[in-house]
Amino acid sequence: MPARRPETIAKQARARIARIREALGRIDYLCSGTLLERTKMCGRPGCACAQDPAARHGPYFEWGYMRAGKLEPAQRDYEILQKVFPTAFQIYYGLAEIAWQKKDTNAAIRYYELYFSQAGADS
Image (tube, rainbow, N blue to C red; front, side):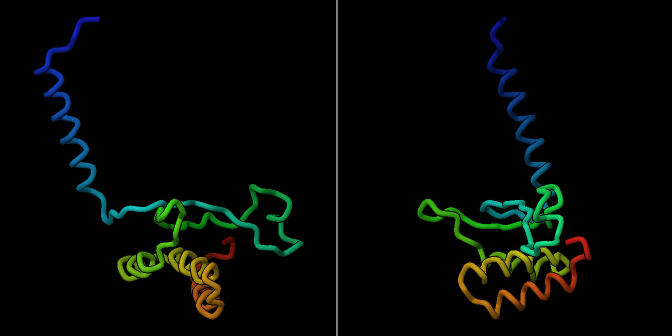
């Protein structure tokens, strides 16, 4: 295989950088962290999700950051997202999960209620 010339390599790199910049310019909102997509079991014994993993509820999206080697929920960022994307009701589920993990039952219930009031019946 013949060696590529430095000019060719540089030209290809510049073209790739231009494509990446163009793609980044089309993104509405960009932030760091880890976005997890999950499905969950509801805990009701008669629900199909208890027996069939394909029937689990969701998907639900959870967003967090790695801090000190652990994934930490990004509550403040969810709240910012809630203001930026007010129609994205899935954000309420993430806020509810964080409140539940922090043992803030009242906030968890409030966010779960907001989520279920806007989510479809199949959620």
